[in-house]
Image 1 (cartoon, helix red, strand yellow):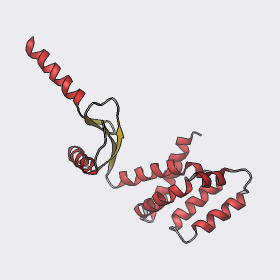
Image 2 (cartoon, helix red, strand yellow; image 1 turned 135 degrees about the vertical axis):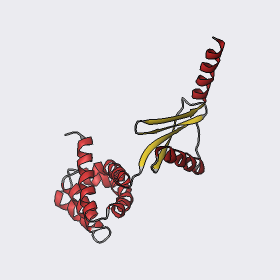
Image 3 (cartoon, one colour; image 1 turned 90 degrees about the horizontal axis):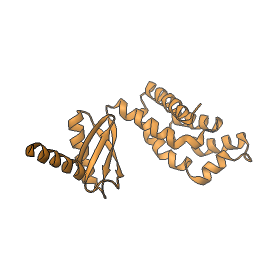
Image 4 (cartoon, one colour; image 1 turned 180 degrees about the vertical axis):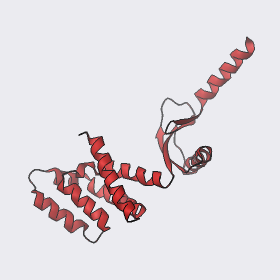
Length: 180
């Protein structure tokens, strides 16, 4: 089974459990905070080392987590330790967060920019896209070295292009159309 399939199964299982007790948003926040701790190089090394017994790994995880997170997340993280899937926690977190956002009617997409993008600009574009798609949209920002200026947005199969290249192409097409 591919790691993508494993990640999807684990994130969906956690989502199903947390939805059944109406705690998906709270667990999403807890998982978001726990992920960097488990994704640290020394922690990954400890849990992936064949020199540490399964019982030792389980004991460390239980003592570190007990009483510090919800029972649903505690059980989930212990399961990851037992099944030796701790290395996938960052991917599982990403997939789980997407499930929680989708449940709330929020979509996610990517804002491609030529340079740095301020938080105010990102918020403005999110608002514009949310209005166009008629649902709340959260955008992650990526630099695109092919852009001279402007930006592009991609959400699912929907794309909005407000780049210099797009406008120059449209201008060229308009000039060509008028000269014929």
